[in-house]
Image (cartoon, rainbow, N blue to C red; front, side):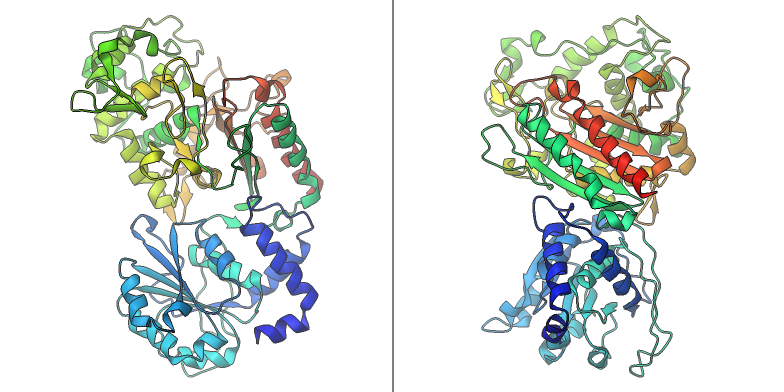
Length: 610
């Protein structure tokens, strides 16, 4: 059947297959070098031909991702690689080639190999369903695990699914786009809007089926959001300009419009030796984006729970501040950077030879980087006292301060009795499906997947790859209120799509809508900032964050050469990740206006499509 379809529509199939390859299997991910109108047309036809059956238990779309361990099993599907690539946008999946278990191995062995997965996604077509062993594998395992069947094929094969009680996503269109649509529908990246229009079996009758909403990001082409792909090509030129001028060795750009990731592309290399190309899945040190992507997220949740109050003081929460000049500083002032705190405290200049060791031990447990371990209690003995003794000079004025977010970290950790990194992992990153986001990335990922930052010849005497660039955060063991978070562009997009949706993502309300509105709105007459969040600058000459950004825009930048900006007016999330501090700190990324110029290309493309 697949071959007949391809012979009948040879040109269309070739186009769609090539588009699928570019979309989901290359480092350039999404940004096809040709128009996506044919993709959008096929996607519309696929939507009309896709039905969800047997979903009485509301398994689809999948939720509770933090507790879901997913295996994807394929047999003779021609689209399995791209299908699995899309599944991996939402949560970590492990792929199994079922054909390997139809020979000397058996499907009983496949059941053994997947025993530690609680969710099995099984891709089948007409040929697969003609094999009773495959159907038996489905019906047997549906009693033990969550099974979701993605079936692309003829209606005549539905009778073979009569004993299947697990959800079945069926599309009668045999195209790669149908596979992409099915993969995304499993997670609610696209809705299922149709029911059966005919009766096929006693079980699958006309009017049967289940409607599901769109609850997560969709991955598609610019045309799906009303944007001409050609109008985004200037992003390539600006990114290459940055690399050729040595403003950064490489970068990743992601654009999400209307809840759809329409552009995600990697440029350049990890370092200037041009040995390892950047990939869209690479993990970056996002530096001060940590302030809003970790600490402020936790603050908002605690504010919702009435555990933390904006006009309460540091002394309300931290006993150690009560006999210091920090006692009566309010949470609101600290988040606005108007508490009068100095920007930072001394770091490696205060380190004594007795403070560190080349080897770890009970006396030197805090790892700064390879071959550098800080003594136990250094933060409590030296760094926190430096915070407490630091002067209050400019209270009521805007002075950007890492010290303020270090203080907020101590407040939220005291309130929850939970380290910052553990709290945001448990309450945001894991349930949202953010696979790479977190502190201490080397505990979970290979250095090859992590973009290196500075070659620190002064203090740490090493290329910083997987260890936080910020020196204060480094001496705090890599977890700080102002820096230390690492993430991929896709993970950042997920987190800020949740913010754009006013705290809602994947069917879960992480933060109350009114709290999102409060924290991201302008708070003071003396600065542009919100609570924790940076915002659009009303001083026109500054063109911040970019010339065309609306006055609703909020987000943050990072010293390593990163930014995220959310513009509710245009339903837009823009992510730019780079390592402009490699091999040493430079200013060209800023002086060339790389980030804002790329952002304005996106706005220009949106406006041309209006």
